[in-house]
Image (cartoon, rainbow, N blue to C red; front, top):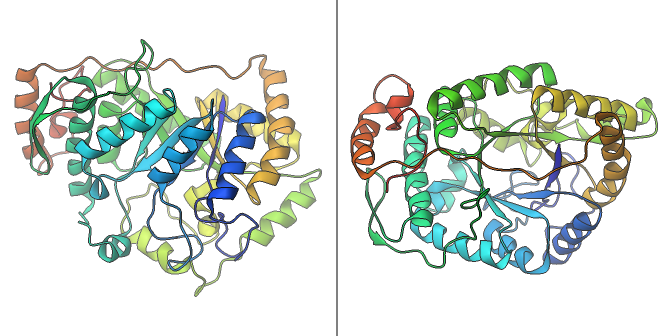
Length: 398
Protein backbone atom coordinates (compact mmCIF):
# COMPACT_ATOMS: atom_id res chain seq x y z
CA UNK A 1 0.00 0.00 0.00
CA UNK A 2 1.27 3.45 -0.93
CA UNK A 3 0.05 6.58 0.83
CA UNK A 4 -0.57 9.80 -1.07
CA UNK A 5 -2.54 12.94 -0.37
CA UNK A 6 -4.38 15.69 -2.19
CA UNK A 7 -2.45 18.94 -2.25
CA UNK A 8 -4.73 21.69 -0.84
CA UNK A 9 -4.44 24.04 -3.81
CA UNK A 10 -7.93 25.38 -2.96
CA UNK A 11 -7.10 26.23 0.66
CA UNK A 12 -8.73 23.14 2.10
CA UNK A 13 -11.37 20.46 1.53
CA UNK A 14 -14.32 21.50 3.70
CA UNK A 15 -17.15 23.37 2.03
CA UNK A 16 -18.60 24.64 5.30
CA UNK A 17 -15.41 25.90 6.99
CA UNK A 18 -14.20 29.20 5.47
CA UNK A 19 -10.69 29.13 6.98
CA UNK A 20 -9.03 25.75 7.55
CA UNK A 21 -5.65 27.19 8.40
CA UNK A 22 -4.00 26.20 5.12
CA UNK A 23 -3.73 29.07 2.69
CA UNK A 24 -3.66 28.51 -1.06
CA UNK A 25 -0.18 30.02 -1.25
CA UNK A 26 3.23 28.87 -2.42
CA UNK A 27 4.91 29.17 1.02
CA UNK A 28 2.35 26.86 2.64
CA UNK A 29 2.30 24.37 -0.24
CA UNK A 30 6.09 24.16 -0.39
CA UNK A 31 6.37 23.60 3.37
CA UNK A 32 3.65 20.93 3.31
CA UNK A 33 5.16 18.89 0.47
CA UNK A 34 8.71 19.03 1.75
CA UNK A 35 7.56 17.92 5.19
CA UNK A 36 5.44 15.12 3.69
CA UNK A 37 8.58 13.69 2.08
CA UNK A 38 10.29 13.64 5.46
CA UNK A 39 7.49 11.74 7.21
CA UNK A 40 7.08 9.10 4.52
CA UNK A 41 4.30 10.02 2.09
CA UNK A 42 4.78 8.55 -1.38
CA UNK A 43 2.78 10.87 -3.63
CA UNK A 44 0.85 14.12 -3.82
CA UNK A 45 -2.04 14.73 -6.22
CA UNK A 46 -2.15 18.28 -7.56
CA UNK A 47 -5.73 18.93 -8.66
CA UNK A 48 -6.47 21.21 -11.59
CA UNK A 49 -9.36 23.66 -11.54
CA UNK A 50 -8.98 27.28 -12.56
CA UNK A 51 -11.83 28.23 -10.23
CA UNK A 52 -12.20 27.19 -6.59
CA UNK A 53 -15.03 24.67 -6.23
CA UNK A 54 -14.42 24.20 -2.48
CA UNK A 55 -14.42 27.74 -1.07
CA UNK A 56 -16.33 29.46 -3.88
CA UNK A 57 -15.35 30.64 -7.34
CA UNK A 58 -13.99 33.99 -6.13
CA UNK A 59 -11.56 32.33 -3.67
CA UNK A 60 -7.88 31.74 -4.57
CA UNK A 61 -6.95 28.53 -6.40
CA UNK A 62 -3.36 27.66 -7.30
CA UNK A 63 -2.52 26.63 -10.88
CA UNK A 64 -1.63 22.96 -11.02
CA UNK A 65 1.12 22.89 -13.63
CA UNK A 66 3.18 25.89 -12.54
CA UNK A 67 2.91 24.60 -8.95
CA UNK A 68 4.12 21.17 -10.09
CA UNK A 69 7.13 22.69 -11.87
CA UNK A 70 8.08 24.61 -8.74
CA UNK A 71 7.68 21.55 -6.50
CA UNK A 72 9.75 19.44 -8.89
CA UNK A 73 12.69 21.72 -8.19
CA UNK A 74 12.45 21.72 -4.38
CA UNK A 75 11.64 18.05 -3.66
CA UNK A 76 13.68 14.89 -4.14
CA UNK A 77 11.57 11.76 -3.63
CA UNK A 78 7.80 12.28 -3.68
CA UNK A 79 5.80 11.46 -6.82
CA UNK A 80 4.02 14.48 -8.31
CA UNK A 81 0.69 13.41 -9.82
CA UNK A 82 -0.69 16.40 -11.73
CA UNK A 83 -4.26 16.57 -12.96
CA UNK A 84 -4.73 17.56 -16.59
CA UNK A 85 -7.91 18.20 -18.56
CA UNK A 86 -7.73 17.73 -22.33
CA UNK A 87 -10.13 20.59 -23.08
CA UNK A 88 -7.71 23.08 -21.47
CA UNK A 89 -4.38 21.69 -22.77
CA UNK A 90 -3.42 20.77 -26.31
CA UNK A 91 -1.69 17.36 -26.13
CA UNK A 92 1.34 18.44 -28.16
CA UNK A 93 2.27 21.37 -25.93
CA UNK A 94 1.36 19.46 -22.76
CA UNK A 95 3.62 16.59 -23.85
CA UNK A 96 6.50 19.07 -24.11
CA UNK A 97 5.78 20.80 -20.79
CA UNK A 98 5.29 17.52 -18.91
CA UNK A 99 8.51 16.03 -20.32
CA UNK A 100 10.45 19.05 -19.09
CA UNK A 101 8.92 18.91 -15.58
CA UNK A 102 9.60 15.17 -15.47
CA UNK A 103 13.28 15.84 -16.10
CA UNK A 104 13.39 18.60 -13.49
CA UNK A 105 11.97 16.11 -10.99
CA UNK A 106 14.30 13.30 -12.12
CA UNK A 107 11.42 11.08 -13.27
CA UNK A 108 8.86 11.75 -10.52
CA UNK A 109 6.02 13.20 -12.63
CA UNK A 110 2.75 11.36 -13.29
CA UNK A 111 -0.55 12.53 -14.80
CA UNK A 112 -4.13 12.26 -13.61
CA UNK A 113 -6.17 12.59 -16.80
CA UNK A 114 -9.56 14.19 -16.10
CA UNK A 115 -12.36 14.64 -18.62
CA UNK A 116 -13.77 18.02 -17.56
CA UNK A 117 -17.09 18.27 -15.70
CA UNK A 118 -17.46 21.97 -14.78
CA UNK A 119 -19.49 23.77 -17.44
CA UNK A 120 -19.43 27.18 -15.73
CA UNK A 121 -15.64 27.13 -15.46
CA UNK A 122 -15.31 26.31 -19.17
CA UNK A 123 -17.59 29.24 -20.05
CA UNK A 124 -15.65 31.70 -17.91
CA UNK A 125 -12.32 30.59 -19.39
CA UNK A 126 -13.67 30.48 -22.95
CA UNK A 127 -12.94 26.77 -23.30
CA UNK A 128 -14.79 24.08 -25.20
CA UNK A 129 -17.22 22.07 -23.06
CA UNK A 130 -18.15 18.73 -24.61
CA UNK A 131 -21.01 16.50 -23.57
CA UNK A 132 -20.14 13.29 -21.75
CA UNK A 133 -19.50 10.92 -24.69
CA UNK A 134 -17.70 13.59 -26.70
CA UNK A 135 -15.44 14.37 -23.74
CA UNK A 136 -14.16 10.79 -23.71
CA UNK A 137 -13.81 10.71 -27.48
CA UNK A 138 -11.63 13.80 -27.19
CA UNK A 139 -9.64 12.28 -24.32
CA UNK A 140 -8.91 9.14 -26.36
CA UNK A 141 -7.35 11.20 -29.16
CA UNK A 142 -5.57 13.40 -26.63
CA UNK A 143 -3.92 10.35 -25.08
CA UNK A 144 -2.94 9.03 -28.51
CA UNK A 145 -1.07 12.26 -29.31
CA UNK A 146 0.51 12.54 -25.85
CA UNK A 147 1.81 8.98 -25.73
CA UNK A 148 2.92 9.06 -29.34
CA UNK A 149 4.86 12.28 -28.78
CA UNK A 150 6.67 10.75 -25.82
CA UNK A 151 7.54 7.55 -27.65
CA UNK A 152 8.19 8.46 -31.29
CA UNK A 153 10.99 10.48 -32.85
CA UNK A 154 8.39 12.27 -34.98
CA UNK A 155 4.61 11.90 -34.74
CA UNK A 156 1.93 12.53 -37.33
CA UNK A 157 -1.66 12.09 -36.20
CA UNK A 158 -4.96 13.23 -37.72
CA UNK A 159 -8.16 12.83 -35.73
CA UNK A 160 -11.49 14.51 -35.23
CA UNK A 161 -10.24 16.70 -32.37
CA UNK A 162 -6.47 16.91 -32.83
CA UNK A 163 -4.02 16.87 -35.71
CA UNK A 164 -0.23 17.08 -35.65
CA UNK A 165 2.29 16.78 -38.49
CA UNK A 166 5.84 15.76 -37.71
CA UNK A 167 5.52 16.57 -33.99
CA UNK A 168 8.90 16.41 -32.20
CA UNK A 169 9.21 16.42 -28.41
CA UNK A 170 12.81 16.48 -27.17
CA UNK A 171 14.02 15.84 -24.60
CA UNK A 172 11.56 13.13 -23.77
CA UNK A 173 10.54 12.16 -20.24
CA UNK A 174 12.99 10.06 -18.25
CA UNK A 175 12.45 6.41 -19.17
CA UNK A 176 13.34 3.12 -17.53
CA UNK A 177 12.37 -0.51 -18.05
CA UNK A 178 9.62 -0.18 -15.44
CA UNK A 179 8.51 3.30 -16.50
CA UNK A 180 8.77 4.12 -20.22
CA UNK A 181 7.10 7.50 -19.62
CA UNK A 182 5.09 9.21 -16.84
CA UNK A 183 2.39 7.01 -15.32
CA UNK A 184 -1.14 7.84 -16.48
CA UNK A 185 -3.87 7.69 -13.83
CA UNK A 186 -7.56 8.28 -14.59
CA UNK A 187 -10.96 7.77 -13.01
CA UNK A 188 -14.56 7.53 -14.16
CA UNK A 189 -17.66 5.49 -13.43
CA UNK A 190 -19.44 5.34 -16.80
CA UNK A 191 -18.92 2.38 -19.09
CA UNK A 192 -17.34 4.73 -21.63
CA UNK A 193 -14.79 5.94 -19.10
CA UNK A 194 -13.90 2.47 -17.85
CA UNK A 195 -13.37 1.12 -21.35
CA UNK A 196 -11.08 4.00 -22.27
CA UNK A 197 -9.09 3.82 -19.04
CA UNK A 198 -8.62 0.05 -19.17
CA UNK A 199 -7.22 0.40 -22.69
CA UNK A 200 -5.13 3.55 -22.47
CA UNK A 201 -4.04 4.23 -18.91
CA UNK A 202 -1.84 2.63 -16.26
CA UNK A 203 -3.89 3.11 -13.11
CA UNK A 204 -7.55 3.49 -12.16
CA UNK A 205 -8.46 5.91 -9.35
CA UNK A 206 -11.83 5.80 -7.63
CA UNK A 207 -14.01 7.96 -5.42
CA UNK A 208 -14.27 6.83 -1.82
CA UNK A 209 -16.46 3.81 -1.05
CA UNK A 210 -16.45 0.91 1.44
CA UNK A 211 -14.15 -2.01 0.65
CA UNK A 212 -17.10 -4.24 -0.27
CA UNK A 213 -18.02 -1.82 -3.07
CA UNK A 214 -14.43 -1.25 -4.17
CA UNK A 215 -13.60 -4.95 -4.63
CA UNK A 216 -16.09 -5.60 -7.49
CA UNK A 217 -15.02 -2.37 -9.21
CA UNK A 218 -11.43 -3.58 -9.24
CA UNK A 219 -12.52 -7.03 -10.45
CA UNK A 220 -14.43 -5.39 -13.31
CA UNK A 221 -11.46 -3.26 -14.34
CA UNK A 222 -9.10 -6.24 -14.15
CA UNK A 223 -11.41 -8.17 -16.47
CA UNK A 224 -11.55 -5.25 -18.90
CA UNK A 225 -7.77 -4.93 -18.84
CA UNK A 226 -7.31 -8.65 -19.37
CA UNK A 227 -9.55 -8.59 -22.44
CA UNK A 228 -7.66 -5.55 -23.73
CA UNK A 229 -4.00 -6.45 -23.33
CA UNK A 230 -3.49 -8.62 -20.27
CA UNK A 231 -1.04 -6.37 -18.45
CA UNK A 232 -1.63 -5.29 -14.86
CA UNK A 233 -3.04 -1.98 -13.64
CA UNK A 234 -2.75 -0.22 -10.31
CA UNK A 235 -5.75 0.92 -8.28
CA UNK A 236 -6.13 4.00 -6.11
CA UNK A 237 -8.94 5.54 -4.07
CA UNK A 238 -9.71 8.93 -2.56
CA UNK A 239 -10.47 9.01 1.18
CA UNK A 240 -11.01 11.65 3.82
CA UNK A 241 -9.38 10.54 7.07
CA UNK A 242 -10.15 11.48 10.67
CA UNK A 243 -8.01 9.81 13.34
CA UNK A 244 -8.69 10.53 17.02
CA UNK A 245 -7.93 8.89 20.37
CA UNK A 246 -11.56 7.78 20.73
CA UNK A 247 -14.46 7.00 18.43
CA UNK A 248 -16.57 9.72 20.05
CA UNK A 249 -13.94 12.36 19.31
CA UNK A 250 -13.79 11.25 15.66
CA UNK A 251 -17.59 11.36 15.42
CA UNK A 252 -17.70 14.93 16.78
CA UNK A 253 -15.21 16.01 14.12
CA UNK A 254 -17.27 14.27 11.44
CA UNK A 255 -20.39 16.14 12.52
CA UNK A 256 -18.50 19.43 12.49
CA UNK A 257 -17.39 19.13 8.86
CA UNK A 258 -20.59 17.78 7.27
CA UNK A 259 -23.17 20.52 7.79
CA UNK A 260 -23.01 22.06 4.30
CA UNK A 261 -26.12 24.17 3.73
CA UNK A 262 -27.83 25.41 0.55
CA UNK A 263 -26.41 28.82 -0.26
CA UNK A 264 -22.87 28.02 0.93
CA UNK A 265 -20.01 28.75 -1.53
CA UNK A 266 -19.69 25.15 -2.73
CA UNK A 267 -23.39 24.37 -3.05
CA UNK A 268 -23.86 25.70 -6.60
CA UNK A 269 -20.89 23.64 -7.80
CA UNK A 270 -22.50 20.54 -6.27
CA UNK A 271 -25.47 20.91 -8.61
CA UNK A 272 -23.18 21.56 -11.61
CA UNK A 273 -21.12 18.44 -10.88
CA UNK A 274 -24.18 16.21 -10.49
CA UNK A 275 -25.60 17.49 -13.78
CA UNK A 276 -22.44 16.86 -15.82
CA UNK A 277 -21.20 13.50 -14.53
CA UNK A 278 -22.44 9.92 -14.75
CA UNK A 279 -22.04 8.42 -11.28
CA UNK A 280 -22.79 4.86 -10.21
CA UNK A 281 -24.47 6.08 -7.02
CA UNK A 282 -26.51 9.06 -5.92
CA UNK A 283 -24.43 11.62 -4.05
CA UNK A 284 -25.85 13.20 -0.91
CA UNK A 285 -25.06 16.72 0.22
CA UNK A 286 -23.27 15.20 3.22
CA UNK A 287 -21.05 13.23 0.82
CA UNK A 288 -20.30 16.49 -0.97
CA UNK A 289 -19.09 18.14 2.26
CA UNK A 290 -15.64 16.95 1.23
CA UNK A 291 -14.56 16.18 -2.31
CA UNK A 292 -14.52 12.87 -4.17
CA UNK A 293 -16.88 11.03 -1.80
CA UNK A 294 -13.95 10.72 0.60
CA UNK A 295 -16.12 10.10 3.68
CA UNK A 296 -17.67 6.97 2.19
CA UNK A 297 -14.35 5.19 2.68
CA UNK A 298 -15.10 5.13 6.40
CA UNK A 299 -11.62 6.09 7.61
CA UNK A 300 -13.02 7.80 10.70
CA UNK A 301 -12.13 6.57 14.20
CA UNK A 302 -9.23 5.45 16.36
CA UNK A 303 -5.83 4.53 14.85
CA UNK A 304 -6.61 0.82 15.30
CA UNK A 305 -10.02 1.12 13.63
CA UNK A 306 -8.69 3.12 10.68
CA UNK A 307 -5.76 0.72 10.23
CA UNK A 308 -8.22 -2.19 10.07
CA UNK A 309 -10.22 -0.43 7.35
CA UNK A 310 -7.03 0.27 5.37
CA UNK A 311 -6.08 -3.40 5.50
CA UNK A 312 -9.54 -4.23 4.11
CA UNK A 313 -8.90 -1.92 1.17
CA UNK A 314 -5.50 -3.50 0.63
CA UNK A 315 -7.14 -6.93 0.56
CA UNK A 316 -9.71 -5.62 -1.94
CA UNK A 317 -6.88 -4.63 -4.31
CA UNK A 318 -6.17 -0.98 -3.51
CA UNK A 319 -2.50 -0.06 -4.06
CA UNK A 320 -2.72 3.68 -3.34
CA UNK A 321 -4.75 5.76 -0.89
CA UNK A 322 -5.15 9.44 -1.78
CA UNK A 323 -5.92 11.08 1.55
CA UNK A 324 -7.56 14.36 2.46
CA UNK A 325 -7.64 15.81 5.97
CA UNK A 326 -7.95 19.19 7.68
CA UNK A 327 -5.84 21.00 8.65
CA UNK A 328 -3.65 19.08 6.24
CA UNK A 329 -0.13 19.34 7.62
CA UNK A 330 -1.07 18.92 11.27
CA UNK A 331 -3.32 15.91 10.59
CA UNK A 332 -0.79 14.26 8.26
CA UNK A 333 1.88 14.50 10.96
CA UNK A 334 -0.33 12.33 13.19
CA UNK A 335 -1.87 9.99 10.60
CA UNK A 336 1.27 8.58 9.05
CA UNK A 337 3.07 7.29 12.18
CA UNK A 338 -0.15 6.10 13.84
CA UNK A 339 -1.82 4.36 10.91
CA UNK A 340 0.92 3.28 8.55
CA UNK A 341 2.88 1.58 11.30
CA UNK A 342 -0.16 -0.39 12.43
CA UNK A 343 -1.06 -1.40 8.85
CA UNK A 344 2.45 -2.65 8.07
CA UNK A 345 2.89 -4.36 11.43
CA UNK A 346 -0.10 -6.62 10.75
CA UNK A 347 0.45 -6.96 7.00
CA UNK A 348 4.12 -7.81 7.48
CA UNK A 349 5.16 -5.74 4.46
CA UNK A 350 6.40 -2.23 3.92
CA UNK A 351 5.34 0.07 1.12
CA UNK A 352 7.17 -0.84 -2.05
CA UNK A 353 7.81 0.61 -5.45
CA UNK A 354 5.47 -0.08 -8.34
CA UNK A 355 6.60 -1.70 -11.55
CA UNK A 356 4.40 -0.48 -14.37
CA UNK A 357 3.53 -2.84 -17.22
CA UNK A 358 2.09 -1.26 -20.32
CA UNK A 359 0.41 -2.86 -23.29
CA UNK A 360 2.31 -3.39 -26.51
CA UNK A 361 2.35 -0.52 -29.06
CA UNK A 362 0.34 -0.57 -32.26
CA UNK A 363 1.66 -0.63 -35.80
CA UNK A 364 0.89 2.21 -38.22
CA UNK A 365 -1.51 -0.06 -40.10
CA UNK A 366 -3.43 -0.92 -36.95
CA UNK A 367 -3.55 2.71 -35.84
CA UNK A 368 -5.03 3.91 -39.11
CA UNK A 369 -7.79 1.30 -39.07
CA UNK A 370 -8.43 1.93 -35.39
CA UNK A 371 -8.88 5.65 -35.88
CA UNK A 372 -11.61 5.05 -38.44
CA UNK A 373 -13.40 2.70 -36.05
CA UNK A 374 -12.88 5.19 -33.24
CA UNK A 375 -14.71 7.93 -35.17
CA UNK A 376 -17.64 5.61 -35.84
CA UNK A 377 -17.60 3.96 -32.42
CA UNK A 378 -18.95 6.79 -30.27
CA UNK A 379 -22.11 6.81 -32.35
CA UNK A 380 -22.68 3.13 -31.76
CA UNK A 381 -22.55 0.56 -28.97
CA UNK A 382 -20.04 1.06 -26.16
CA UNK A 383 -17.58 -1.73 -26.76
CA UNK A 384 -13.78 -1.74 -26.79
CA UNK A 385 -13.88 -1.61 -30.58
CA UNK A 386 -15.95 1.59 -30.40
CA UNK A 387 -12.90 3.38 -29.05
CA UNK A 388 -10.76 2.46 -32.00
CA UNK A 389 -8.62 0.22 -29.79
CA UNK A 390 -7.74 -3.28 -30.86
CA UNK A 391 -7.90 -6.11 -28.37
CA UNK A 392 -4.45 -6.76 -26.98
CA UNK A 393 -3.18 -3.19 -27.27
CA UNK A 394 -3.57 0.10 -25.51
CA UNK A 395 -0.83 2.30 -26.89
CA UNK A 396 -1.13 5.23 -29.25
CA UNK A 397 -0.52 5.30 -33.04
CA UNK A 398 3.04 5.17 -34.17
